Length: 283
Image 1 (cartoon, helix red, strand yellow):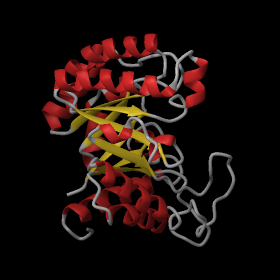
Image 2: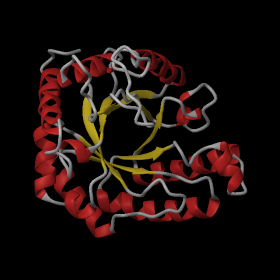
Image 3: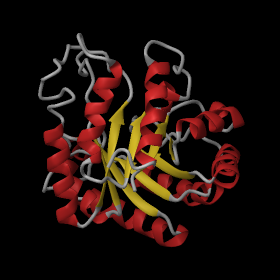
């Protein structure tokens, strides 16, 4: 059965509280993927070991949820070594079940070249370090990336060698340029089904478990209900029986923006969708 999670982008002091965890549990999330650092080149963890310990205790011990630690690796040996060393401690303190690398803006050929490396050797080094952490801490390895990334193609270097991939198949009313996306557009709710089909098949050829990242913001198209947009997007995913559907992001559904705009409406629909899925009404 598909589980449901959320990428956690709220401040550590907010995350490591009963109130935050209660809201996560109320929506129905079973996985919290904690974003440890930013997408800047340097390794810049936001969480202290004490904050991770507290978040793990509140989520894992008190609520039977799981923690995943999510990082943005940079193709630079020194930065990766620093990241691996910190993760060795962080995985213990957080009681994490998974370690996820976000392979988007930083993990590309041009960035590796800028750092005096090449992406092939950098990918091998990243996998070696991740594999050691997996063996030492008994965690699963995950990759997440957007649909246009090299890691979302047959030429991927890292994704074929992990346990789970989370494809970010986001359909929103506006694209990253703030341009309106039409309801029937390639990147609207219906058009994104092509990405779900392709990427589910790609993961299958690798023998890697398939999951999806879902958008929970900017879901109001003219002439359509917010719930309708969410329903179409999630039906595109559910048909592939993903291991997990993970929302971007906690700020919208349970965190700092939860009372703004259509976010309360989205959160309520999300909770209802999870309940219906668990009860077998959606499969």
